[in-house]
Image (tube, rainbow, N blue to C red; front, side):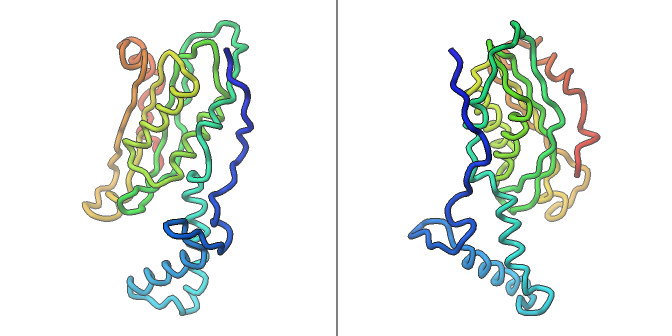
Length: 221
């Protein structure tokens, strides 16, 4: 039996993101507190936050963080619940490849830039392909490690859509490795999560990997 459609429009941001309302002990800091934290970091880096070029930097950084991490105020499961059962019996693999995303690593808050590839075997119902791309963005717009990002995308699709199998492959460049530390350019990390038939049936897994090809050469850096 199909699930009822859900209004998956943009959800409201987490309280406190757009104002200076106190959030209480352990709650989200106010915008004013966030901007003050940026000033402290600027001073710690050796610059003067009061000089002309940096006067508005704390406000800009706070606004940028709202954009970078908007995924904390969105529900990926609500996005996935709008499915379609009128498929005329279609039961072959559905693949959406080369979904570009931007994320930030939770260790250095440095950018992770890459692409995700998603495949699933429908069981009586399918989902709009834009919803798959939106789910990638919701999880990517949070502090992440790539392994967790891969698992969260695959697990959410399996949980809500309940297909016969799900496969997710992510290829990404990590700026915490390319612009600092070992500073190795051109390095890509590849992770995968195979569930259901994608894990148990080698033919299904090979078909999926064949369909996504070898797009690593075109991953944005």
